Image (cartoon, rainbow, N blue to C red):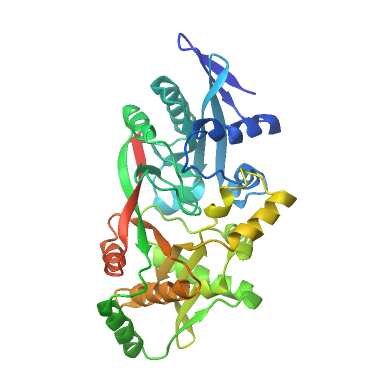
Length: 379
C-alpha cells in the first residue's frame, strides 16, 4: 500500500490496493453512521464493483481510492476520479472526488482533499468536482438540506457536518439537485387532469405503454436514443457507453416493475421514457450490506411491504418538450403507483435550474424536501 505521512498531524494517507484494504475502505461508513437512524447500508458487493476491472466505467476512467489514518486508526476515505469521457464531452479538464466519508475533523478532510487535488492535477486537470460516486450517471451530490428523513433508493445520505468540512476546505457550490416528495391523498389536481387530457388529444397517434421485458435488448436501444437526446444539454451529462448501459440494465432488471417503466410513442417513434422503482431502501436497511441466503429471504419478504416509489428517470426528446408529455407521464406513473398501493413517491433528482420540471412536480402536489449539492474548486 502506497502511503505518506503529513508531518505534525498524525495523519497518514494510504492508497487502497489489495482486497483487504478495499474491504476496509468499503466498511468505513459503518463507523460514521453507527448512530444515524436514517442511514441505509449499501450492498458491499455493489460498492466493490465500482473498483473492479469488470466495471465498464473504468475503460474510460480511473478511480483511485485512499484512506486517511489518524494515529493509526482509519478516520476518512476518498477517491480520485478522472473520466476521459466527461472531459471530451464537456470539454473541460475537471477531475472528480467521490466516496467521501470523514470523521468530524477538518484536518483529516483537508488532507484527503489536498491529496486528491494533487492526484488529479498531476493528470493535467484544472478543476475538481464532487462528490460523484463516481459520475453523474450514479449516486452524486452531498446532502445539505433534508436530514430528518431517510434517503430513497439510489440516493446518497451523509451527516450535516460534511457541508462545513467541504466548504472550510475551499470548495464552493456549482449546482444543487432537488428531491421532491409527493404523498398520496387519493387525488390528482383537476387542472393536471385537464392538461393530461389535452396532451392526449393534441398529440395524434400518442401511445403510452409498459416496457416489454421479453424484448429488452430492443427496448434498451430505444431508451438510449431518448436518454442521450433528452439529457444531452443538461449540466454534467455524459452519455453512458453501451457496456455501461448493459450493466445498468442487468442491475435494475430484477428490481423493475414493468408497469412503472413507460414509453411514450407517437406513431412508431419512441419520444419519451419514465421509470419508477419501489423504494428498496426499506429492504436494504435490514440487510446490513450483505445479500446471502438469509438476505434473499428478507429481500423477498420485505419487498412486498414497500409502499413508496422513486421516479428516477423521465426524459422527453427535445422536439416534444414543453408540450405536456412530462405531465402526462408523471400522471400515468402516479396513477399506476396508486393502484399498487404506493402512498409516497420521491421524484429525484431535478437540477435546480430545471424550473419547468420543478413547476410541473409542484403542480402535481410535490414539494422539495431534500437538496443535494455538487461542489467544485479550481486547481
